[in-house]
Image (cartoon, rainbow, N blue to C red; front, side, top):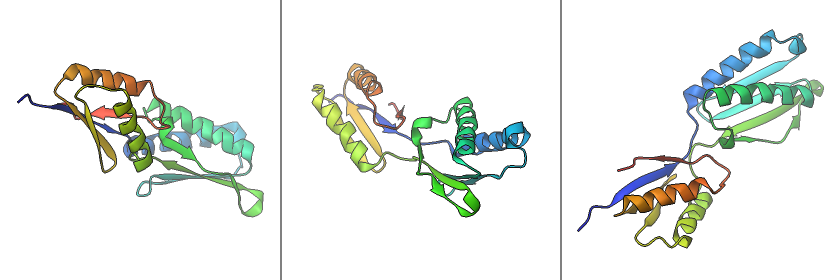
Length: 166
């Protein structure tokens, strides 16, 4: 019997790179003229994979997000995996926003990926959900390459990583 080849579909944010990007953004914001004497707080919680932004108004909040986005892109942190929450009013007329980092494929998205692969009608490709990842296997490496190419063309709202190719 032929040995099955396989790969895993995962997603996530490199938390160390996110930490580095946040530190760079803090440094840049502290030197910018438009943020002189303005409340700017960027709290990074590595355990929960969240960012809390707190500043004077929505305009400044958007400016902080632009700086953070540039830093994340420079450090190869996928912006698709960052979900900005609602802007909330805080004390003293300030605003707050929480940004969560997606660290695994949720079950609904995993089911959509498995359904998409089945709908493509590949001959011997099998896919199954394994926790916060999806494993795809087949005796044919060529079919696995076709699956990867097809999945890259789809949008699931997160950045898919293809690894453990064996």
